[in-house]
Image 1 (cartoon, one colour):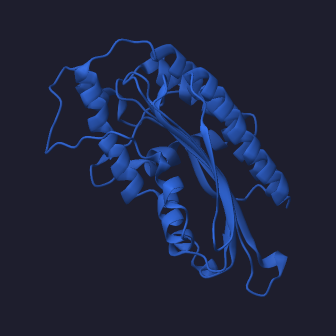
Image 2 (tube, rainbow, N blue to C red; image 1 turned 30 degrees about the vertical axis):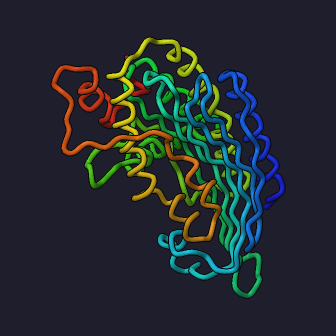
Length: 304
């Protein structure tokens, strides 16, 4: 199990993404290195007020601790309280133009040591995924995003995509609103069944697919005209994004419960958000189409 290789891949991935979107958006990402008192640290890369991104954060962290927080052991009670180590890259991009979707991507590795120090009794897994959250849906964009995800996973194992696509639809769901956060993508967690090398390859496939999955969409939609109405709806829908991240997201919970760096954990939140009481878009409008045509589970790969 080559943990150093995982770290090297993740730091390189962060650099590649930041360089690409810094150039695309016309403004470089700032760099903020930090250390965690209990162990480890990371590098947060952030841009605000760019031409493409109103706010975009790409964080790398490699942290460890002596006692696993509850959020990480909820699905594996046998490892509760063990010494642990976690690393990953997580990003969220909130674009300026409401016609450009918000996007999230995360790839991560986790290990919990055996209390007696026996490596054979240790537990490890990979996780990750990406999902797209449009405000004004375009079928062409949804198809592209899902097809890139499928092709990336198929190159490792053709059986993975259907399962990871469904997992994404189920995970990124605001249960209290009874609606999906967006149009999905891929998601997986606690993945180690294929052995270390192949599981690592799955994580790399997802990470490497992010730029080709999202960049063409951003480039195509960034110049579309919009006004106060579209901006208002974008800010309203961002509220749903905030609700999911704070109420349901396991990564947010893990970071806060493990004493993580709050600024880095909450870097995913949009800078401007609106809430309204019991508001619904008027039938037949582009805003209503988001709910009827896009915020529903679909086989986007097979769409014509």
